[in-house]
Amino acid sequence: MGDVQRESRHKQALEASALLSLSKGSERLLLEGSGSGRAPPEGKPRPRPGDLIEIFRIGYEHWAIYVEDDCVVHLAAPSEEFEAGSITSVFSNRAVVKYSRLEDVLHGCSWKVNNKLDGTYLPLPVDQILQRTKEMVNKIVQYSLIEGNCEHFVNGLRYGVPRSQQVGRLLLGRWLLAELSWGSSSHQ
Image 1: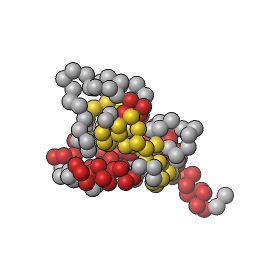
Image 2: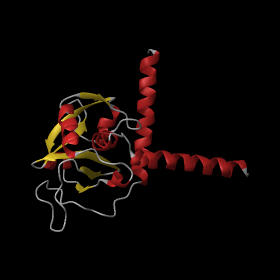
Image 3: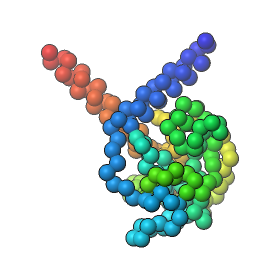
Image 4: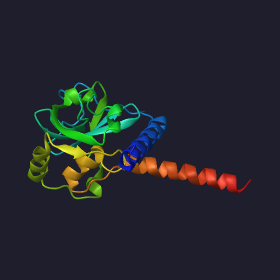
């Protein structure tokens, strides 16, 4: 096996380990979407073009960007054998940018509009977000759980800044665990 293949398999193993750690510590106490993809439940705001949609999967969040007419753009595994946005898709280092009905992306999971970085970054103008988003549809992009996942992708489209807070939480959690275990072993 060549060095490139070995490095790729090592990276995939690290990402799989990271995802498993994330799913073990993840809990969903608040369910905020009907999962239907149709009109939002009473009292829930309807997504507007350019809004980020957070989809609560078991153990992680999948992200999409709302475009129009109950349709979103999101990253999916390029292979038809993987379900779009599934946990299995993290083993691929590529993703395809898909234009889909929100209902088809949800797979029964709850969701909410979550533009949580609006207080940190100024969103691009909506027409620019939509133009950038639509230009990406059907393109194959590099995918990495740690450096280029669906949350990085949608934040890059909305703010021009690819950022993933769930990866930040994961890495901080792993760092804290390492520090705690190092600290406790050095005092024995």
